[in-house]
Length: 316
Image (cartoon, rainbow, N blue to C red):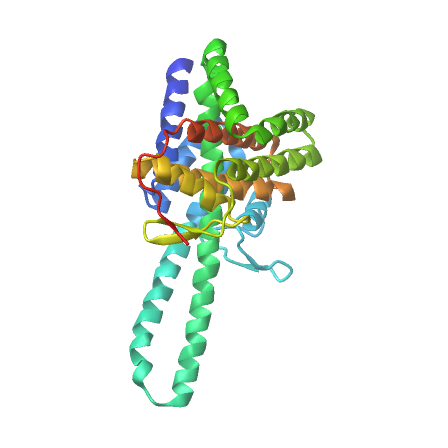
């Protein structure tokens, strides 16, 4: 396989994987296998090792395993060595089994034996706790996987673009940001400067600024209010602390494609998650650069959306 063909294959595979994740097109086990192939092609040994643990279960003697036990929220008691050591597929089965047990035992609600009902209630609490814990692990795994795939995709996507083409697009996006979210424009040079420094503290500061960029962007395009916005039957609060809700409301007003809205919604959710995680030094310099680029491109895509084509649904 020539270098050009391999590069095109990596770009195509990463684009497919991004869509698979953001549009929920594949089961977790298939996503992991597909992502493992991508990690092998780009020579990311640590990601390959991590994904192997996600497929086959974690090890207590491997440094990469222990690192990702923490990053994926698997520890129950670190000092005691207790945690969710199983594979992602095993956790999915455990979640479904716990849900089925709750549903099955709920049929016994009419039993009058108080002792039995108390035991049943305790069992439901334990099962619900297991479901919440394992669902949290799933969410973190998908967030990490999305960040890795996005970093590969954006790096490869822009590697072969002519400099003039990117500069033209950048000038267009810069003009939109300056016109519609001027405060954001002032924060961008700070991120670039911190990323050039490259040390852990500078990366943490850069990602903190990325989060503030997203928050300032939300305030600029959809200022906070006491109203709520209805999307798919859900009433989203629009107060000062609900930055993601307000960005999603802005997108919903301007984008008729449900798949595109879902992709943008998932992207903004992952961005907020990772730039917040970066404050705790869990993000590498390479991922930090990719996250900043992702933030910038997200702002550009949102600002390029047409003016509202559907009625705004706001509830007092």
